[in-house]
Image 1 (spheres, protein in one colour):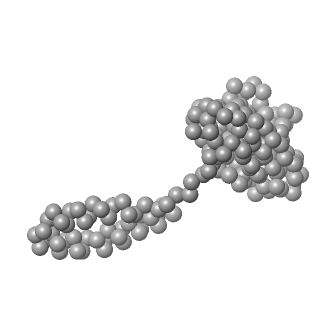
Image 2: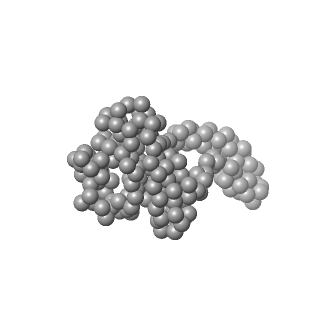
Image 3: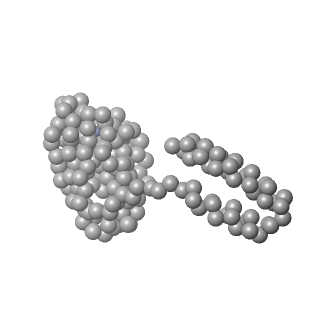
Length: 175
Ligand code: ZN
């Protein structure tokens, strides 16, 4: 993706360089400069905006993925979040939860602690200060709805089932 963009830019600049070079030899400097600067802004690709909503539906699957990597909510207003496990594998092998972490949490350290807490559905109670909200651990076809309110900021969320946090991880932005 990034490489493509750079390549496009290189091709674009190469194409641009020839007439600019010729024009600067020709003498009309002011006209030439304004033409070069105006082309700079045309090379940005449009980005898909994540909608802001306080009713969130997110799912996990057997490929250890959430369907959302970014969630945007309104700060200071209650969020209702439903996690659904869309997979078919047994809970013991491929359970999913949604754990919203406090800013500044060391995600890896948290996940390492969580994986030792099978009896507590991988929610480490000694790290409660780092947990802003979490769902139950869900087996195939199950869902759980939670509510929480967060101030303006950026938060990371993970599935704390052992080994899942590497791919089941995303960002919640409250604005
Ligand atoms: Zn998971």
